[in-house]
Length: 114
Length: 110
Image 1: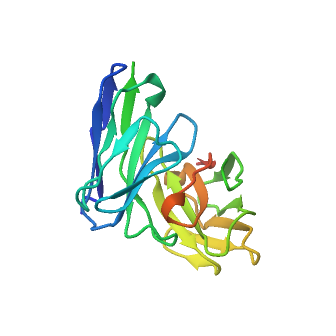
Image 2: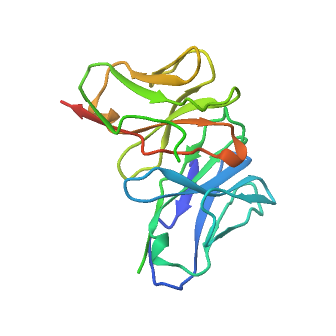
Image 3: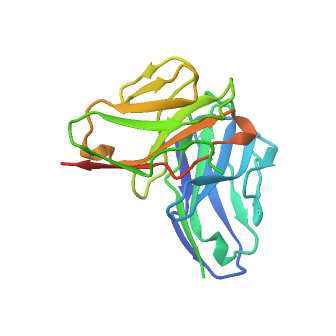
């Protein structure tokens, strides 16, 4: 059981470059989300999705786009990377978005923008 | 701003119980209380959650105050593998996601 899989694990980008962080889950979860974690800080919600075709913004959405064409996949796109987007990114999923559901996290993607 | 208050760090000895406190005075009636932990260089890992009653699972126990404004995560017998940052979160789900504060850095001494 793979759970939540993120790729790549490490990436270095130059300022202005674009890239996509991939996230896939095999648990048939409706709810998926992306968080970023800066050094010594907690996680902050970037975007989330309550089902295929539905996405919405979280706490820190600027500079990021998402789409949800299938239940399994929820890619995060950086259109024009900036040094402020250097962070660790975590994808997460849960059965639904209800408050009592357990959320499962991927292992993280370490992104450095130079 | 984080919606919960936790000590920045705590230290305990191996094989002793650990009580990790959390204050969540702004919790609403339908919010669940969640605890997650994060080991170095890993994603957060679910520990336990509850609504009103105390909860037990194989990892830990969760004691919730009667007014629900605070809770305590109890690790009954700490091991070195329990050294991690522990996050206490209350969530209404959906757009709220999980609002992580800085958590409590738990140090376990052998």
